[in-house]
Length: 626
Image (cartoon, rainbow, N blue to C red; front, side, top):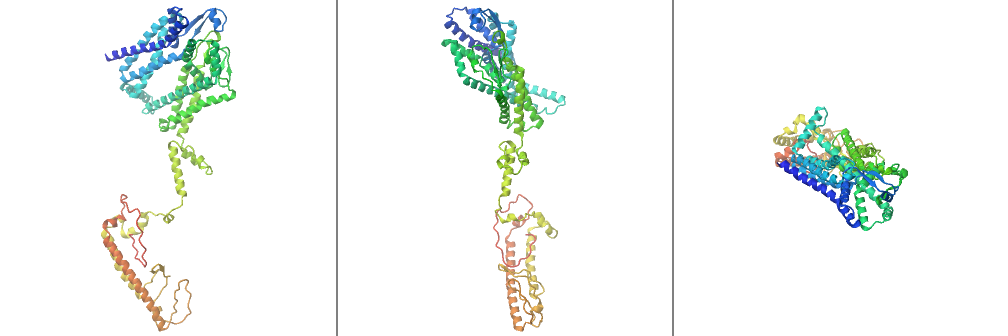
């Protein structure tokens, strides 16, 4: 029941769509009949003409018969003539297509029930086309059934496209099931990438649709520029017709209905294929060859050929393809897939765009008069092929430019190039991050060191502790009590070493007094003996000068012994002070702080900037665990 209701509502809406298109023709026709002809013509003739125009807008060919007087007014020989009219006023066609697309988009929200709405809409529009075709029979070439079938396709194709797009966007269950069936078919063929097929297909369609829209926009701009540059010729042709205000209004509406045809012809002109206005004519960017044309003012905007400079126009189409990929592909599949897939997506998009343009060019081709005017418009397959080639080249170049890694390019450039050239392309994508990181690294490497500590080589802590691991064990095996015991053992061993220094049996090396160091000198017990006969050399502050060899008397020996005793006493006091300070430090330091210096746990965060300890004068015991 729900499907039936949806179908009935869609049929009523389709009838309304047909009525809107018919009204866009009948209102100007009634004004012309009432004002210009003062209702002199038969109403049946007026409505037959309106119905024939509606049928022509839905691609039903017509046949017209002109009297000798009408033929003369059209610039033909004053004889009765009959000819076909097949060029559709696509402005009226666009009304039906846009409303049908909107209807299908709305039906897409109802899931599978919307399919019944599509059938109901097609049926309703078919009934409307049958009624209108009944009035247009005097002008029709095809039978009524053919006219109805073509009119239904004009409505059903946009409606179906809108329905499928909405279903894909909403991911209806039936859509997901259909996609899974397609994926299983791809897997059955042994092809890889079935899981990524929906995303890549969507990216291809999106890029192809953007290419078509960009090309149509470019063609619209070209037509606008042509109208502005040929405005004088357009005005001259309008004045030549000598129409009243109502006639001028109707002529404007007729040309407005033909404006989409002009845009499609402009698109063909941009590709380089051009179009014709009658047999033996050609309008391309390179040359323009025209004969007699109908007295429509819009034909005054036809541009002249540019010669060799016309190659700029197809180049603009290529640049359009490059710009589209760069603008739309920053966060798309093109940056994440492999190179073969990344190149296949724009290639397929170009093929889709070329096929669509071929169909649009075919819709803008037809007869507009007798004899040589029976052939007008572009060559559809030529235009479509050129669009595939030009847009395909642009899309592929844009894809390569989008995926290029600027850091690799900078790596192969010579070092002598300016930095602005070496860092080109660093503004987009992953290449920007790589170039910025490389530039920051070079700047940091070239900056001068702010601390003298940077001049020394940094040695890992594990390498420093290797010589002490054999004796003391690994740092994580040392406990706080063992560290305290080692400190006390070092303090107790200090008096024994001092005793050896006092007895003269131990060499004193590098003794420090305050901030000055005494040069190394050896003193033995024999040198201090008053009865010794060995010579004595007194060390001086600079290089010691040898004294004359002589024996010291008793008084001089006592003086030397007293000076050495005072020096040894000062050194003993300093060592005692160092030992006491070290013992106090061990008592005050907690076990956590002792383990902290040797902990292998990276989570322990030492003090960031410890204050440097003042250097104490004198000789200190070696402490391997520090």
